[in-house]
Length: 355
Ligand SMILES: [Zn+2]
Image (tube, rainbow, N blue to C red):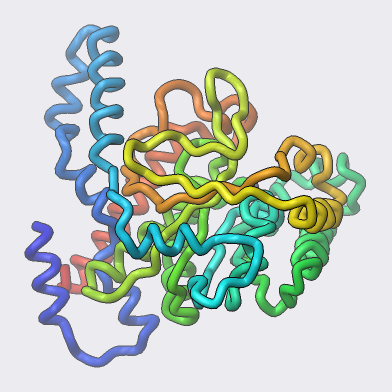
């Protein structure tokens, strides 16, 4: 099936507009494709459901672990070289065009505030405006309305990135509501794909899929899907690197670490006292988020190549971090939305007669 898709893509060579070309790509990263070829066919799922509950749970846990290991992508020399060049000081051989796609205005400062200074050409994209749908939340934080809170978050991130000389024209928002990205996955994939077409990034820096925040996972989903489309078209896709965010680890929120993937090399950048001072100054601009930001250390920043995720299985066993703290969506609901989005994107493709 993979070969069929690839060959049909090659044959479909009529000149079309870039955005239209993107929309007619077969949607799906290799990992998601493998998920559909994996052992959890609907027949097998039905068979599993007939097993005793404990046995099914145990089998599911083993399956998740096995599938997670299959997602490994050995770091290539190219990726290793990019990771080695990350640092707070501008390097002549640093990746030229970098696109940072994160869920909220402050995620970029938390995960990569110091390293952003080392990129000669960087654009920051926030998937959401950082203001939840519930207007009472904004009022409780002392703002007149949800819109006023969203505007404040925009002002904060512009001020924070101004500390390192990044102009506000380089800071974009896709305009989704905080906490709602999982309900707009298809739209989000289109928007990220359009960004790739417009900006032609060499490297995309984004969240890991780790169940820390549903918007983080939705952002990772869209980035991986958009890059998968380019690859399936035989085009060069940006290298996807990850910055650290947070996830649930034994009942506690763990920051500045990744969920482990065997052979996934992690690059740790140690910040000098001057780097920390600058990063602290950036953090200070986020006046509405200071209690949250205090929990993130200033000593290091960590990066790695994104593993090949299976978005239809949980990122880890047990309760996800956002399931502990957020009532908007559960992990199972998020994965159901991801499955639906994948189906919709594939259906759209076959309807066009290309896939
Ligand atoms: Zn975030």
